[in-house]
Length: 414
Image: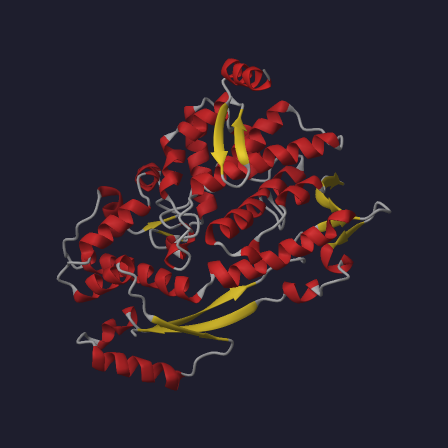
């Protein structure tokens, strides 16, 4: 009888359900939110991988930005419910706006998420593109996203709303750490998102974690650090990402020289035009909305057989997972060592030395698990005082996690 009543309730209220492998059933009760989810702009996120090319290292990491966004809505609903139980006033209109803002926070991601963020649009962050999508959707939905946009831009008078969207301990991070850990199988990144949300509170219009949640916050910071080194900055993933970036660079170079390449119109638009924040207009946004992982992979498959040996080699490297050798260490590689690899590659490959940068390159990556100088995670103590987590931890030296760790890498053909 209970199940029957639940089914009748869902049918009458037109509640939509997503079965999420992390949280179970995610209920979408708001008709506007479901209409946004059904919109082609949002459905495109089904075709954008959450962790770029990490699936070349972790075979299970094929999850998408769509799944992440739905998970964020679920956690936002839990956060709102928790804060209301603690007598923090959040009305129905604000609840809707918070859910929409977190739902659309990543809608501006391009193919393979962060990997190609600056390959198609120069000096424009995905958050800026997300905002443009939100404005366009706001026009389509007759201004019903205005409050969500206000919160997303941190212009709403309740400042802790923005912290739920973007901060050192926001809903976004809670979901992606738990989700990415699950799909990659990297258990070290797993966090207790439910407990962290249960410990949420608000003090002086700022989001805080109650004192009994200190250890959960410590685990969160450690998990984030480990996930960066083990997944997001894994050296093999890094090599694959740079190869993909260089394949796009080579394609642009060939197009500039009048060489014909097979690809769809959206990808052609961005490879044939230099798009920046100054000319990212409505035409650019429409083309961006038609660009996803599938377009890149389709192009790479086609380019694998192109007569240009550089483009074909780079494309095959991704398609067939024939990735270059990558070395990573804590110190910079000497110019002598780089020149040695450069000259050896020059002997192996019959290409112009001016083009060897496509195959031999170096760089660095940085990992900073916690930034306490800029609105860090605040702990609400039992005496009603508020202290940064770094100053309250008695088990870990969290101060060390505020230091930026740099590692240097060099890539070259095996």
